Image (cartoon, rainbow, N blue to C red; front, top):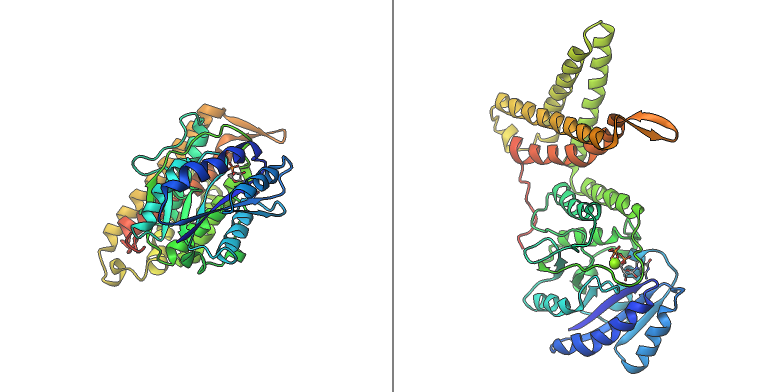
Amino acid sequence: MKIVVILPTYNERENIKEMLPLLEEKIFPQIKNHDMQILVVDDNSPDGTSIEVRNFMKKWKNIDLLSGDKNGLGAAYVRGMKHAMGKMKAGAVMEFDSDFQHDPQDIPRLVDALDLGADYVIGSRYVKGGSIPKEWGIDRKFLSVFGSLFTRIVWLNFQIHDMTSGFKLTKTEFLKKIDLDNLISNNFAYKMQILHDVVKKEAKVVEVPIAFLEREKGASKISKKDQFESLYVVLRLAVYDHKRFVKFLIVGGTGFLIQYVVLYLSVSANLEQFVGAGLSAEAAILSNFFLNNIWTFNDTKEVKEKGNIFARLIKFNTASLGAIGIQTLSIYIAVKLLGEKISILGHAVHTSFIVLLPTIVLLVIPLNYFIYNKLIWKTQYLKKKQI
Ligand SMILES: Nc1nc2c(ncn2[C@@H]2O[C@H](COP(=O)(O)OP(=O)(O)OP(=O)(O)O)[C@@H](O)[C@H]2O)c(=O)[nH]1
Ligand SMILES: [Mg+2]
């Protein structure tokens, strides 16, 4: 099979100088049964990366170069994939960083997985034997681990462990079924959508453990924006897939409004504030329970076969207390770390106001959704094709 290794580069002159000879001399000779090709997708790097590539192209005929404007990592890969599938007639394409964070020595093992029948091979940091750099700070480690975990929960896909790896080998037969022209993100988050779409097309997915290495030369191009965009892509795809998830969010939003109305009414009725807080929380819990029961989860066996609604209500209430516990704990920790108030644009704002929203979006929503599906209404939550 013709396998095209796509190497996106932006200012990677120092790295590409070492990468191309290594692939040609040490790695490709290990892969005897495939026609290995290289496609460098360079966005007119100001450091002259393409000059190095052109030099190597004189020596090795299996190297191709695509130059273009810088429109982000996803756009570069899409360009490369189209070229590989079209002009180069690739049977499979590999996504591979050119900064040595992906170890070239791992390439033959990904190819082996393809030979054993996989359609989509993920170089995975989160299966046994895989790892992320020890040198990473706690924040970067947390983001990476949490990013995959969050995605697994929101997509209800627990069979895949590494959702954000950039090291992939994909049969083009599957890539051709994907609408590459209309990906939500042109940047880092493109990879989550391709993974999502390929899984939906029922590709056989295999994760091969890899050690993700620390970058030694050149600079990282990943930005804060990529994190938010990834979050958006994961949620938006979940909405496409899971109408149930959307209903769940609408019900939750309604509960939130009810909580405020009841709190307002109890304050107007001169009730103690803590009584009002309790009453309004319970009003929201009851509204959430009954709306979810008659709408979000009305198709489940639990509801159709008239399982014990009181048992379900009690479980639901308990889960909701758990959510209150999580919010309390998260605010407690934030206050300990950041103090009672945080200064925003010169205004001192209570820490709890700032922390509540991310806690709800990142922890309470995915956890509640998971518990409702798995424990309370017991949906067929794992419907993805068996790997
Ligand atoms: N052509 C092109 N390549 C890019 C672009 N952004 C990043 N790259 C390349 O894609 C690869 C991965 O980008 P990195 O910035 O290293 O991203 P990362 O590995 O997720 O993040 P770090 O761990 O911080 O390095 C590298 O080879 C980059 O040179 C881009 O906009 N266009
Ligand atoms: Mg990198």
